Image (cartoon, rainbow, N blue to C red; front, side, top):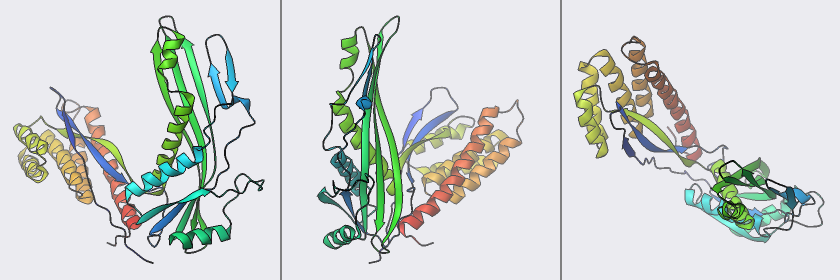
Length: 351
């Protein structure tokens, strides 16, 4: 089965006006490509928990470090840790709408008789799953482990506590169309909490219980792997100049109302008629306006003009930091052009 995956360019904007500063910052949600290339012919996947329950022989799986002593415990376990990771991964993957359908196989497939903890699914098991769920690929969690470290430090003024919850997970993607293992990935993930208080009990109560922390670690591990497999949104900050020319204030008002094309026209007027520094800032603003509209090559072209205009300005006209920011933005846009090309390939969009 062949299909073309479609993706929609979306941007969420929040403008933060910075008092008397010459610029404001704008928050963008930017779609980033996945780390791996999955053929567009794979429209449906089935996710499998193929990992044995984690039973550690190491008593230090949970470390507790107090001001006066250290010790370890191994009695706190999350029996359904693998199931939670798989459910988090499949739910996040489904929400991305990268595949037509995401199925979760019931139960665990790991054969306890196998000595190899990283043993993959058999060819028979993979074929059965593909047929049963009418899928083109199987994504299997083949191994996981976890642990925590609780640390409380006694400072002169208060107690300070941290809790780290760590996990390792080992994944395979089986391509049902070719019969090959498409990708193998080892994910090491850690989340942490912190707190402060006047007593040991107070700071300990500001941290989640170890079991709850591990459940959250499983949730996070699944989400992280979903970002590895499918494109995802990432928050980035952009600068927009609001001062330096009387018309920049009007352009800022239009931006606040989402009227980017009108704001671009004003900035273009400034670029054509302003001073050298005004032209540099206007070109910078135009680059952002084009990026927001999804016109990345035009955005990069304006960023390059801004960078060139800044290079012509002396140290008394503009700071080196502002010049550096123009170079950094041009580099960001060059990367976005490459990411757009990669996204088109991942979604099966032809130029």
